Amino acid sequence: MNLKEYRPRVIDKKVKEYMSAFGAICIEGPKWCGKTWTSSYNSKSKIYIGDPEGNFQNRKLAEMSPSLVLEGEQPRLIDEWQEVPQLWDAVRHKVDQNKSKGQFILTGSATPNHKGILHSGAGRIARLRMRPMSLYESGASSGNISLEALCNGRIKPSMTGEVDIRDIINLILIGGWPANLDMPVDKAMLLSVEYLEAIINDDVYRIDGIKRDVSKMKLLLRSLARNESTTVTNKTLKKDIKAVDDEDIDVDTIASYLDVFSRLFIIDNQPPFSSNIRSSIRVRQAEKRHFSDPSLACALLKATPEKLLNDLETLGLLFEALCIRDLRIYAESFGGNIYHYQDYNDREIDAVIELKDGRWCAFEIKLGANQIDEAANNLIQISSEIRKDKEGIAPSVLCVVCGLSNAAYRRDDGVFVVPITALRN
Image 1 (cartoon, rainbow, N blue to C red):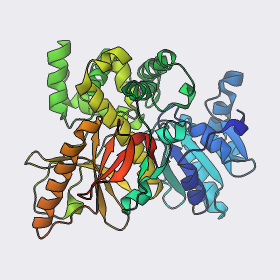
Image 2: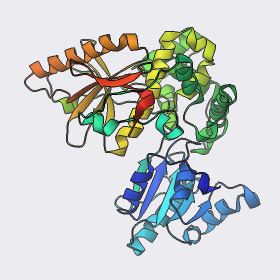
Image 3: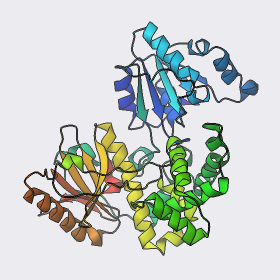
Image 4: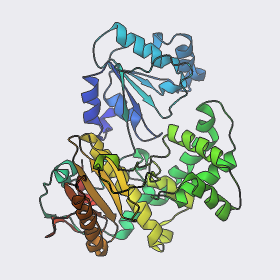
């Protein structure tokens, strides 16, 4: 691993911040998203628990003597610690003994059962969520517009250049996997297919040693892909599987499989935004379904550039997923949280970013520039309705994130317009 080739990640700043405040940190996220590279870049020694060399000697050593594998120059990386859950308590104990900060970096691509873990690690081990690369991290966004500045109402109007819809399609299909950088689209698409196969056939069992029905897991994943960027319920997923695949699966099994997918960081749902509005307007409480990267949905749908170009509805949902992934990465870097808004009057806001001071910003996501007017009017209408409600707190910023816009600017009605290919944290 040549760290001279390391491509900076948005999470790097937070890693340093947390290392100065906690004895250890745990970086979690989907496989192949770059956790090991980032952790290696920020550590001085390392051990890879999942390394197969010597018939998995590192894992055996960790099982026999967890404290022994902690020896080394600090910060010390313990990669894929969940392979030996006892390591969590060993790190927590070591941190208790030595009160210094930034002793260990743990990485994990699965959340294990609590079996074998005696202590939560609260106050000693801080968790950080890492995701696949955003467009800014992979070099596909110019980064001319800062999301943090935008959320504070500041933007420098600028021409950002023409964007071809085919380029947007390619970015969705390639995904944010570091291994796909500089890969042709057709080759990069294979990674997502193999990723899902590896998860289903190996990682699902390894997470807790329970054998599950592979065919039913694949049915559920395909249904999730068909319902990407929607708020369908588990019951609707059941009906979708029955209608499309002519197979049946009970709701309890769906719930248990979704829990496994969440623990493996395959899915990354968008929670509803309601209580923080403090409004009497009734809002729905359903999460919006997302994979951790839109390329996974594409793999399950067997999407190709040609198919997506001829199915703009599906393309629009996948583009929304791409934008949510990036907005989440950027917002979390400055303490923001991302939600969606949907009330019982069927009014929706694609993305809500809540800031640390309680303010919130509303974002509509549209692929085509011809949809900007409609999206801006929707934001203004919902904001106006919330303002009329005396208990409601209206959004401080309204913005349309667009795929094919060639400029970043503030409209006369106060709504910002920003291309996703010009955005950064």
